[in-house]
Length: 471
View 1 (cartoon, rainbow, N blue to C red):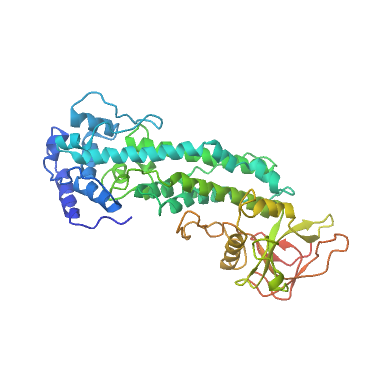
View 2: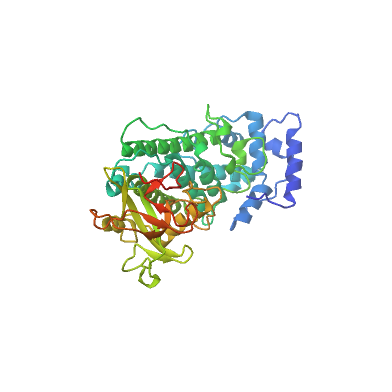
């Protein structure tokens, strides 16, 4: 987020200079007489209003100065006590489970000459409220249903696989989608920073090692569980660091959350009015729902790719008029003008002699995958286009999900390579004599990752490129 560009920057610069001078200040109220706050408890109606209130009231300056003098430990509670000279109050947010709320109105802070403290503590209240909601949703039954690995593998697995999908990358990609998806719809700008900062890159999480089992399903389920546990722990860490919980270092606060340049990360994470909103959590659950649905789709697609050795076949000999259109009859296929061929999902069947044949994906798999009536609600055209762009952009191999270079114009947007899968373009050759609707090979056309005129027998190299070996 861009910093607020206004004449209040000069005022803030002066405030920092005054705050850094080494002279005693007996109380927060006396100390703030040095500054000229001008907000006067105004309501907000827009993001710009929230920014102005934060800056005009010197909310960040108040918090930063107080922490610099008194320390981070329980700073919100201690600030509230000092403003009102009360030994006890209801402001209590030292752990991730207790209620954290401002128990006085703005005018009561204004009467003490520190209305900025109200906006500061309200920002903390809103930030923690959203984070706790996210944490609760990470452990809800709805999430467990979305991430039911045994059910997904039962739906799609055909055989065991020795190949490992990059589970950590897909989970991180799923979480990062929340940040990108919620940004256009959340009224509190801080939500997007929290989502993208806390739930984004793989490095955000402790890299879990799956249990050493021979079971593909077990490895996948184990990693899913461990990463979500790490996500819950990360929320706890951020809340603890924000409120000054003992043992929670400020380095635990993601850089993506931090605005302005105060001395303390806890204040930067609240800065610029990013948490001043009447409904700061608006859009978060919807975006999480979408992200989890995408995650479930990714897991299903992973099982198809690795467990069924699936690939897209671009049939260049098919009649465009007879190819499906992604809707109605033959809804599982459609003619792609960009790829110049009829896109069909197939799978490789490895025979006991080491050779392979090709079969169209069974209808029951299509019924589960596609459309609103399916269990996984994938869109035929969207899925193929994502796979096609992934293959072409990576010069004829399957790329990894790419969050950093993806655009999220809305919460339904897809990251690049989300549905990455091998793609072969050409024409089917002879039917396998004993396998009925199976095929023995493809004659390849010009296409990224393959040579025109070559025969392909169903093999891929370790990097996902076409291998021309027969066995």
